[in-house]
Length: 304
Image (cartoon, rainbow, N blue to C red; front, side):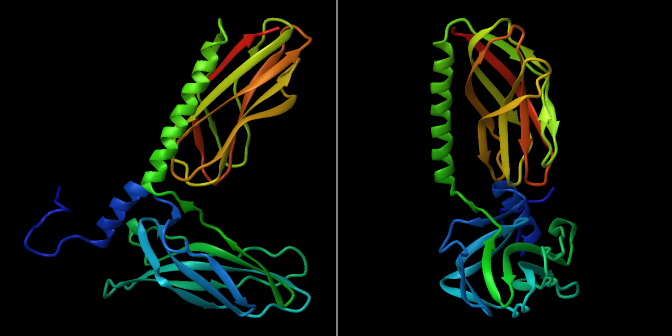
């Protein structure tokens, strides 16, 4: 064990330690930090892209375009009658001999094709493992013939701590209102369901919950993400079918997230003419990671 944030009599704080600290505060992913013009891309011509001021974090490494300035990135002409996607990355490098580190923009040119172009490959490193190169995809430049048709930003802009705190307070207040609404329903049946894991782009389903009789129900469902999501969208919904629970899907909660595990919950009103109607929850997320869902519950109250 060694001290980092204290005087030792000689320089001792390393860039790796600083990155470790930042990863603990803002996460291990890649984000644009709210600052300046948030690295907004501005196409000056088919051969020149301006990237406005701002700051980004990638695996704990902070780099910036100074406020009041912009960077210029030179683009290569497209090909007549062909389509192409170029990738602009923030490229981290470390000199193995001098230990000097640097970040700079790099354009990785894609392959021109007549149909659907692919995004070119890039180098994905790990700074904490000591990799000498680590590239963070920041923008896609789409070509149709010789013209640039789109510049797509790939990173989300993170909220500041004050805004995050405000969002958490608002979310707590909304959950309190939901809780009060449930309590006001009167006698409510609660069914706790087993934890479930889901992978990117694949729907996962809970066990079935059987409603006791025909009629109208107010259904409230909840699921908590227990991992640390990087980015993407998560969705919670109800599937209803009188036989096996594989019928129509009704979304009750959806959100985008960036490094924060959250609760998804919502209400749905169901009217069924059949006894023993079955419902189950559908859990889904994208963003390239595996998620564990816990505290999965279904509350229902027959109202008619």
